[in-house]
Image (tube, rainbow, N blue to C red; front, side, top):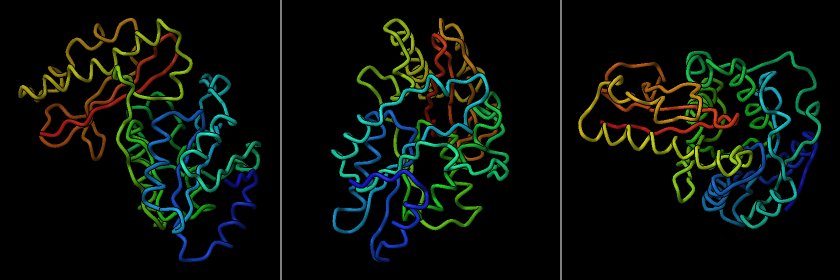
Length: 281
């Protein structure tokens, strides 16, 4: 597995690649868990050894963190990440160490309006601008035939798909299902910041989504009824938001008439966790 640090090295590597070689990219902020590894394995499945390259990127992107957020606390383990990447058959890991390498200046941004207005966009202003800017930079460097993203970050995936289409980028955006722990907790790098009590409290998120889905499956379609009792069910976590929105345009709705997204973000012992479920009539 080749490890590159500088964007110019990645550009040179990509230019030297024979045109028939396909490239699959998995962008991450590192501290890889089974959710990330499922993306890498799927990338390797879609681009078999001998037919192309699987590229993992690891970069804790500072521009998607707000001033009071957990940039400094975000878990990091590059050595462990690279070992896992090798086991998944990754060909190239791009791991820039200096943020200045990816941001020679902070004058140019990629911002997707509309889809970024609600949910995480409301409580994390500028977050998706940072996400779209770094993903567009990585796309420009790696020029993948496909890039894989997890559906746990549903809003992020929707925004990246819109950006990809609007900027007429080559390749394909691939969404992959949420990977959960055996007890139901959605896998996240931030789970490492939970102590034993907080880890137990965090199970309230997946339990609550199960409750909403059970109500939906009995025929309930009114959003207020589906979300009734959420704050109590999620305690002692502190909800950031709990919403049901249209699954395509992410706008709030009152009654589910077509596929909808139940999404929530909850602070559990100071750690912000997100989860979601798609409800299809």
